[in-house]
Amino acid sequence: MFSVPEQFSAATKANFDAQLALITTLTGKAFEGVEKFIELNLNTVKTTLEESSANTKQLLAAKDPQEFFTLTSAQAQPAAEKVLAYSRHLANIASSAQAEFTHAAESQIADTNRKVMALVEEVSKNAPAGSEHLVSLFKTAVGNVNAGYDHISQTTKQAVEAMEANLNNTVAQISQATAKSAPRAVAKK
Image (cartoon, rainbow, N blue to C red; front, side, top):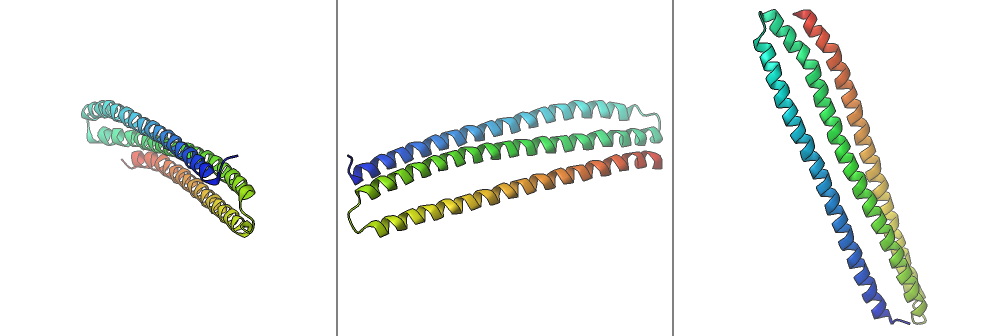
């Protein structure tokens, strides 16, 4: 049987190792998210430059102002749709990274909580007589911390879901407005 200081020492080492593993995992996920973000931006810049060059050539080839404005209006809708697609892709990257971070943190916290509770149970078995009240207070404190974390986790999830719903709603409204305004702009010319 281990003594209480040895148990705490082993638990501290295990907790440190778990935190290091969590930091390594989160850092890897962060780099993956940054890599996706950079890739998205590079592809967007490349595509935008190619399309801008083609659009400029098309506009310069216009024979009269009417054709110029018609081409400009015709190019507005695809450009707006590409901005919306970029926004959706960016939101998807952010949402995916957040979900991976949350999953990694939740699994690590659950594992740490199991280990802490196992340690508390083991220490309480070896605790001197009369310390039951202190052990009970400690268990209650750990339970309250876990409940607080669960509440914060749920609130964060709800906030992220609300943000995603608002973003999707905004994108849909902008898309509808752009679709309606492009034909009107062509008709006014």
